[in-house]
Each structure stands twice: as structure tokens, then as C-alpha cells.
Image (cartoon, rainbow, N blue to C red):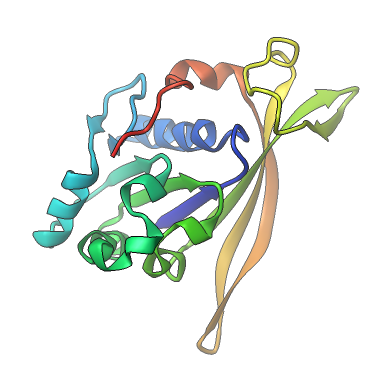
Length: 193
């Protein structure tokens, strides 16, 4: 399953992806990430992704989280990405889940965009008097004045097929309280190739 998580900078994309990975970890899946999380995982990089593609390697029962996928697989260099995208597009055959973040999907290779199972769009919001209010993306996510009322609004889209054409439709919106999730990873870690 290919799951793209998009949103503006500081919108909670990595936080949401880490939450999904943690749920998968608790369910017994092996976790692979290109960033550090505070639970058992295997750290991977761009070279590892190319190796997987070249060897036609398959995994069973894994979850992979790739923060800022465009850093690893720049869409402007799609010919270099063919081996890795082959691995990603075969993921549904071996019960693997691949999550990745970016500001928007056009940053990602078209072979991935065309085969997505799900897209989640993240926005930051706060809960005031029982109502959710979106907050400005310019304010840093960990701003102390919001920490106890900060949530991530997630709108999920599923791929549907109509006689050979494929569209994404909004399927649900939900909210995650952010504060309990901050201990799962270092929110200030920079992603390297």
C-alpha cells in the first residue's frame, strides 16, 4: 500500500506518519525509516532504496516511513528512480505499507503518484470551546501557547476506479491530539539523502 501524506511545512505530516508507523510497530510489523523514531526500527537511506529495486527484493509485513521523499527520489530525476519505484509499486503484493511525506504530490515521481492507494492532507488546528480552528502555518508547530490544545486535522482521500479511470475521493476527516505523539521522534531532525 502506498500512502502519501501531504501538507504545508509544519502541518504535522511527519507526526502523523510516525503515529501510523507506531501503530504498525505495535501490531508486529518491522519498521524502516529514513529518520529516527523512538521505537525499534531500521534506519535506511537512498542507497538502500536503490539496492532494493535492483535486487527485486520483497519484504513481508513491513512498514516503511520516508520523510520528505522528494529528497531521496526527486521527481525531476525520474530516470534515476526507476529501480526504487519498482519496489514501491510492488508493495501491495507482500502486505507492506509505505508511507511518505512531501509538501505536495508533484514533488514525487509520477510512477508513485499514479499508483497511490491513499493520500492524507494534514493541517494544524487548535481546539477552542469544542470547535476546531485551523492555525497559521507560519507559527512553529511546537509553539508553547498551543501545545495543550494542538491537533492535526487529517483529511483522507482514497483511490477509486471507474472503468479504467482513477480518481481520488475524500473519505473521512479526523483529528489527532499532537502532544502525546511528540515523544515518538525528534521533530527537529533534518532529512539527508
